[in-house]
Length: 142
Image (cartoon, rainbow, N blue to C red):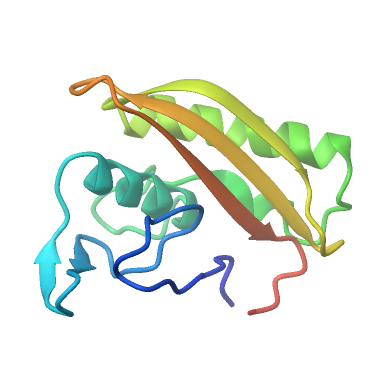
């Protein structure tokens, strides 16, 4: 069962919204694999945090975000509020490299999708970035 949504883009396009590469790596314009650094590494770390359920990592059982608790919940304001709470708590605890500027959640175009919008600032570079995470409340793979 997977809770993530993927969007594939051409390597020349900006990485907007959801992650399109394996954690820690990205494709260059020439199609080669390279390590992700800086703001890209922070972005991937946030995505990994949101996709990891607490208890999933053996050596860090507390690491992760409790979004899976929302599976099969109605796509309403209460669920959105809980998603905001879980994401904020996970980022504040596990990702000290970022400062949350705005965090919002709302129903997506698909009634089973909760869209979580995050605007954040990378503390080291003061770079501002945005991320949209589509959480599937139905538990079905896309």
